[in-house]
Amino acid sequence: MNKKIIVIAVFIVVCAGYLVLFSKKVSDVTIERPFVTVHNKNIYVTLARTPDEQQRGLSGMSALPEDEGMLFLFGEKQRIGFWMKEMNFPIDIVWISGHTVVGIEKNIDPQIGAEEEELRIYYPPKPTDTVLEINAGKADEWGITIGNTILFSE
Picture 1 (cartoon, rainbow, N blue to C red):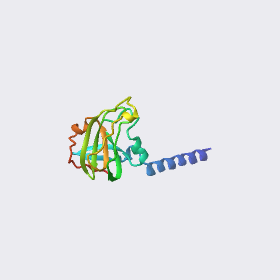
Picture 2 (cartoon, one colour):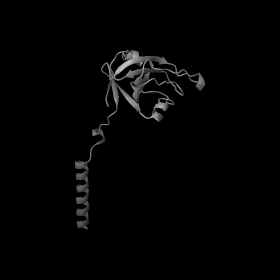
Picture 3 (cartoon, one colour):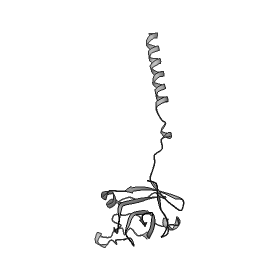
Picture 4 (cartoon, rainbow, N blue to C red):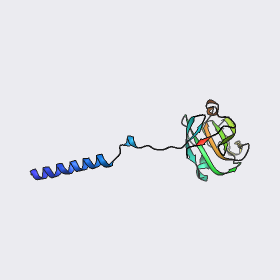
């Protein structure tokens, strides 16, 4: 009987030691989130890289977190139109070419209830390879203007 207790105790001590030596606490794990920086302001972003992600965009979302955005990465510079299909809140669209802001559409109305053919389509003033969507009013609040440099974390 004492031999069984000793074996169980040793097993527990070995398992506890293994857990201490070879595991990390959840608080020690850092999850890197992509962000862009403008005027020393980090804006955490959800990336839209694939055509499906880009077509869906922010559609159907009830809100965008206060200091976050969605970053559309197209790879090649082009003049892709954006619309507010199934949007539930107003946004600012920041058109970016390379690392430079080339245009801004501010306080775009979500056009809730409008038929698809009635939705306005927004185009950049020149070809862009990146687009940042943020909550309406944030471009002004964060001082984003045409000519600003945008830095990407990735």
